[in-house]
Length: 148
Image (cartoon, rainbow, N blue to C red; front, side, top):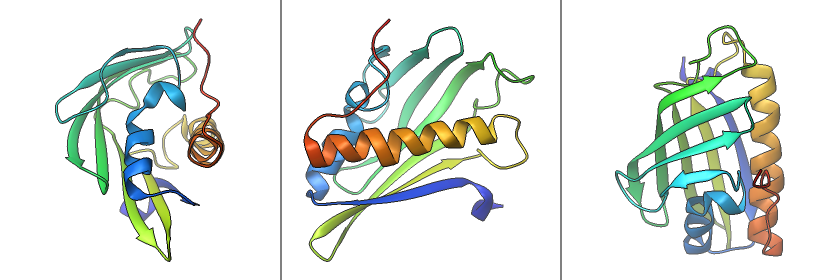
């Protein structure tokens, strides 16, 4: 059920254009360990977090300054039984102007309480969205996982 998908929102003092640009600058807020491109429709990129998490995302919906959706085409999570839990899930960023500020609604569609990585993954997403992406948009510098 949709309401069980992990979702978190942040509101920033930035324009929708700045939010869109920052979201697509994945290595500035998620991880510097990125191969590929994350800028336009059909781009694909792979992120690595040591030997714990590797996943490949494809940009399947891109509406400039409004929405970005990634389809996880492959994943390997070494800390859960089903190493491919993220495969075929979607990661969505919806951007909207609200009272002179910009709200970003983040949803990981398919990351639900029934999956084993839910607790660890939602904690990590919270840190990356409410911490790193928020800092990138408000302070000009995020706190991505550093290149190893």
